[in-house]
Length: 581
Image (cartoon, rainbow, N blue to C red; front, side, top):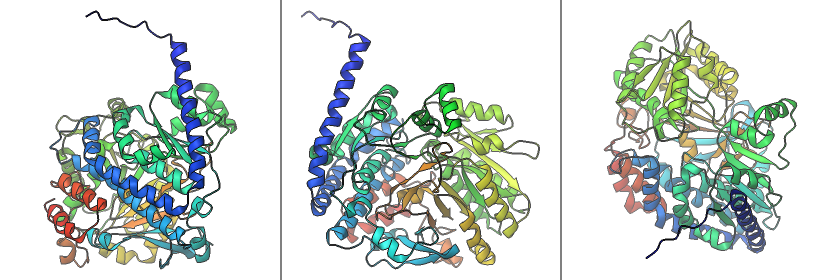
């Protein structure tokens, strides 16, 4: 047999062929848009039910592909992260959206029966966690609510819920989703939000890091592809640029960095910087975005036990090291009180937690360079971990914290800064620091023991009101807000294209709430059984998203199976696994 090597295709011809293929994709979606607009809400709910089935079927292969991309040992407890941030939130998100469509189809608001609460500043709050009897038991001791902007009425909230599905025949065109490269549930969840919340059919362009998941996504989302409302494409920046500027694309949504956002909106290089300074974008269509930032972890001083110190050190290590540190919501800077008598004891436990967390490769592109730049800015930083792959920066009195507070390192780099005072004075100063000095407004974390929270009283509530972040977690990680299907996820509202910070708009938001201000989630300070022994009514053990949770992989798999087909008979297995953490 003779092997014939084909002649290479000239670059210009290849580029032209790629453009023709992308043009065809957009033409197909415009045809699918007509079918989508002609479908009623009951049909759309049925379509999402089909997607739930295909996601469930693809879940095992999904996690295997993500494990390969992130170069994890398939027997590692860290594989649990790929279940709980992969198919699991997509399944729960589909369930929440189906709930909303069912209510709308019946002529009701998705918030029918919801009892609103109150929040500081005269705000109305909407409870979003727990959202079912299953969640109430599974996440016992956790709660969440959406704070609406001041002046919003209950009638505004109920009548506005549903977003574009309140007028499902109104076209929003073809949207482009530029998928994230770090968490595998982000691209599918963004597609679902565009389709349902905005009534917009979608072309999903994968981040090249996630190209190996193309076949998995194609299987999991096959009902949407077959219905003609979704197409998935791969390629580099030239494909993304062509689609962004294509006249057939009506809207762009991206997850990534502020630098990438600015290049899309204003162009790259010196010309792009000049256009940004003048506020004259080259992009002529609307764009929404989720861009991460530098997330603070404010530790309010109190009187903690030795086990409290160790548990919360593992909690904070998780907030940085989950997914290797490649999370837009990874906690980056811990804010401590200089006057806290237990500061040194806590830092000792923190060093231990960061050093002993399970080892993993630096799988995300550019990680080593970002760690090197952090080390250059802070030569005194400590290398921790089996191979010294993690950096802990304890900013001293004579050190400048600015680089740490304004650079999203997107790698296993964790910093510590200190402020004077204790109690309310410390908390107020920490809030001001986070609001004024940190880049981004996606999420902020606060850790405080129950006795300290009680002593602060309304002063604590006032501090939360002043904290300008899209998700605030109290004795929890803001990652829980990401995992809560009914919680809006995005930056604090008000950013502009020229000062984008953590982006504009929200996603997830399974109850389709119109114009939310922020999400606030709360958790127990201690895990069960210590929570009960110390007066907290919380039956939740060490969370499966902790990097130190020994049974994380089993628990997360069982949670995904429960999300696939909720049943009380599955609950004992989930709890048995969770309590082995």
